[in-house]
Image (cartoon, rainbow, N blue to C red; front, side, top):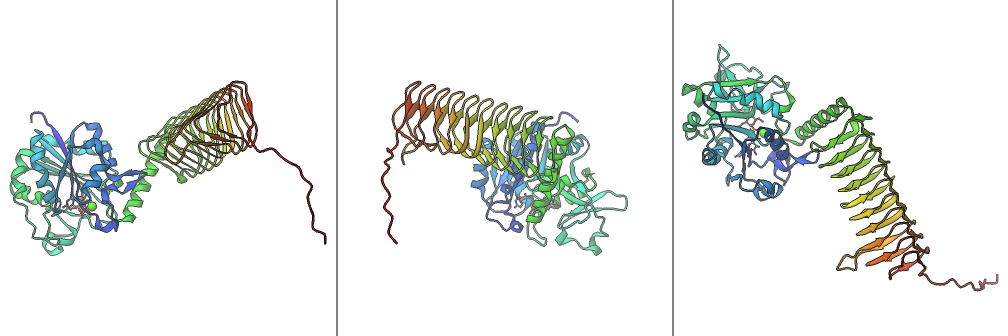
Length: 457
Ligand code: UD1
Ligand code: CA
């Protein structure tokens, strides 16, 4: 056969009634990422065009993937998987595809390698689909073969009748299909909805193809858990755990030291270099990056943060969008919010919250501090209880603390304000004016010692 050009159609319009959630099923998350994100990730390496059929909660699905604008096809009424494909078909043809890969949006564990297994048969048949033989065939569509093991049909669990369809083989449909566009096109209009659900089933294409004399192949994948579909909370949790294990074990095999791996959750887009060390009960999500030689202690919740070599994050921290530099020490019990940048050898200790601020090289904020919209130079010391007052109820203002400055404990720095190089601020001050380089500022009420009057008993 001449060259093949593939276009994928992801079926994602269903409500997911069995999830009992108002959120569309394909937006339910596994390891912090929506189900659909995982499906897209498996499709991306092949470089094929991807169309997505949406319907239930269409606005929410589109909003979750703004970068895919223009690739969504709306199925306003969800009349079944076959109907979903009919709705997308003209868009498929418009891509000039010779073959269409259809994938259920609720199959997030699929890998590029498995998809390759299916697409590699493109030149040999008109319709191929992946089959599995799980321990429990549950609600999967049953694969029916004849005496010669040739595919005859897929019959939905609800419609399966032993007397009509023969004995149960245990082989079921995984919901991932490869269709040859020019030959399967004509079958789409022949789908009917006279079945137990009253829906147009994509699976009926198989029987139509067989009776039309087309070549149909079932690509058998044993009991591969990557092909499991998710319909209920229990199935989601099982799949999430399978994926979690796959990621954590993969990292260990590549040289990441993960203690107590059963308690570590790492998202699919996180990068961890060999030589990093992670202790148990950690959750690391988003596009976080952990360099070789970084150590993450237990009970850390991390999203989109980066960790340079030699940094140490102790226990019980919440980090989001933070940049932790080389040799930095964090925690225990600190909160780093988006835009927190800790330069080489900085230290951030207990009950310190940092937002959109730079802590310069070797600078320390060891206890009970809030730093927001602040730029701290190198070698500065921020005393316990220092608060940058960055917000006046309407606007945010910046604080600058230059190299070598020393901020005494329990200081309020009312922004906009600058504390100069090597300047000193006395404990308990409320600083509202700039402090010059090498200056010493003190701004607190004077102490008066009076004689205490005691009641006579
Ligand atoms: C489907 C297959 C079944 C297979 C199983 C694999 C059919 C009729 N049955 O069953 O043979 O074993 O997947 O997991 O296809 N969707 C739409 N529009 C609709 C209906 C569904 O886009 O009108 C989407 C859903 O969002 C979902 C996918 O199609 O992502 C599959 O639908 P679902 O209802 O989950 O099908 P199953 O009953 O699991
Ligand atoms: Ca399903």
